Image (cartoon, rainbow, N blue to C red; front, side, top):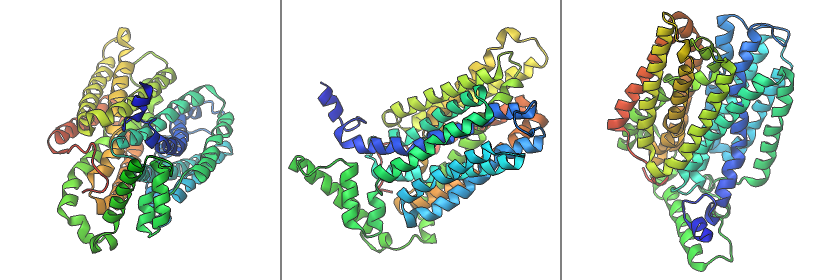
Length: 466
């Protein structure tokens, strides 16, 4: 029975998928470590605002917003840097590079003497995250089978959310100077593992004309051995030849991408859904709230401990991301996006209503409601808007411009990250928490309406088709 189960093509533990799974787990070590850097900020910022454990405090609205938003500046830098280098150097070298700025982040955190150290550290964290969000989805789409690609891609945000929860916990319960040395183990182990076990993607090697190396890489990721069944070997190598032919046939495949390619009919059809996907992903506030979660709960009118509530939210994020890995290749991307945007809209509007009435009425008996509503928001947001974001973004674009268009889209996304991280604490103070939540809920409601009519299902789509 188990042998038949593992033989199914969509089983992650099947023989054919083993090295794809191993690769996904290895490259997501840096995703976990990056998530720790994101989650660590929320409880740490509250500590640094009064009775700081280090030699300075981060008190002003300006300092708080810029410590948060420098991640966005770094993300744009990482997007552009890795987007430029990916086609030239390949995925493996770009993956190795990610460990360098991330390690420097934690050294700066440890040796921080002023808030400027944290600015630079968050900038470096953003470079790692921005580069990661470029190279991971493209690399995984090139090595994964179509029937499990969504699951592997969803593991990116699952890994980040595991790290975010870890960051919430260590930031709340451990001493400031103990955390950096503990976390530095992860990028070191990641670097060594990528160096030893990761091979360049066959698609990149084909584009570079290294056909023998591409075949070896293809056989590695599909786990094809010389002693395997002849029919299975022949079927797999036919797949390789089709990939090779698709990437090399015709002048339009050989030539560099031109401006005209960005105005082809398939490309133009992709821009609308991609833009709304970017807007809904960031301006619904899902990522921004993760960075300021402790402050949100402290201002929500709830009597529950903000740091405890934040840790619970971190666990809910992981659950939502895990559900995505189970359902992404079963239910499809569109259904999860619709459920996600509708749920986020309802929960944020309800959260705003609670905080609005908490200013005028005694709602202490309902003090659990902000945590319940934010848990609903984060869970439903992660099963679609967050969990399926990168796989949808990559699959929307046609083959010839896919890498460049996805890279440019993520640059736009990182710009939105910077804007939201910068303005969110200002909006909380100027507009109040209720209006801020209603605004984010309205963006998500718009995303639901747009996706219902214009988002195409891409489940099972071959990476060789437009």
